[in-house]
Image 1 (cartoon, rainbow, N blue to C red):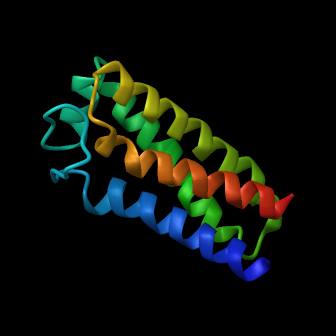
Image 2: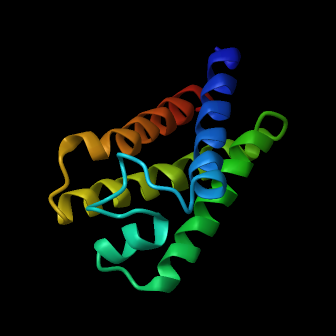
Length: 122
């Protein structure tokens, strides 16, 4: 079971780092509304500009903590829980702007990964 949990941690952590560090200024089919980048996505949700950086900092921190959790078990549940909560927020934002279900798939998948991580770590 540890191997599955570790794999889920790596997938979640690296996935978040990909979105927030490598694809931040790029468009994807999953961006909210008609956004071409992360800042525009948050603007589509009606969120203030500073929230992009707050949420980004929280998500990057959680992603790094999940990766570090491969060696420090005490990081896993708190940061998987934080990331799960942030994914619920992401899903609510997609609902707020009436995005098609397709755009919510990455947030939903990450939420499921986090729930799996928490369940396996408990």
